[in-house]
Image (cartoon, rainbow, N blue to C red; front, side, top):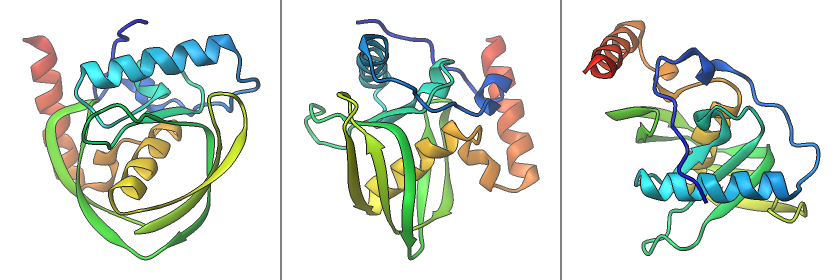
Amino acid sequence: MAILEILVYPDERLRTVAKPVKTVDDRVRTLVSDMIDTMYDANGIGLAATQVDVHEQVIVMDLSDDRNSPLILINPTVIERDGEQVYDEGCLSVPEYYAPVKRAERIKITALDQQGEIFELDAEGLLAVCIQHEMDHLAGKVFVDYLSRLKQDRIRKKMVKRARL
């Protein structure tokens, strides 16, 4: 188990589009395990492989109160979306900043689990927000992309200044 380095906005590597995982093997299972450890260490509820500079379609998340029920999504695809909700989002790659983002209220996805088996998941509320947020990372998007250009510039300047300290 390893704690991986989380890329911080505006790092251009966060803009890399992730490729599908070809085979769920021991390498991918180790990545999943390391990502879970990294997410817990950073006190996050979700992490996409893109955020740790691995450009494959792998997401881990855990919304449980006791932080012991990780959800693994490999090659996730949204097959249905419905409704609309606005949620104040934060991100491990944009520390200490939260902003309202509009997303689908309910989604249905297909994905592979850690054994490479396909499954479907119906999600709503915070889980739906989290999945959409992390899937954006796999597409090279960061939640600040939904904000005005002015807010994006402010956040970028704060993150660059923070990195210099």
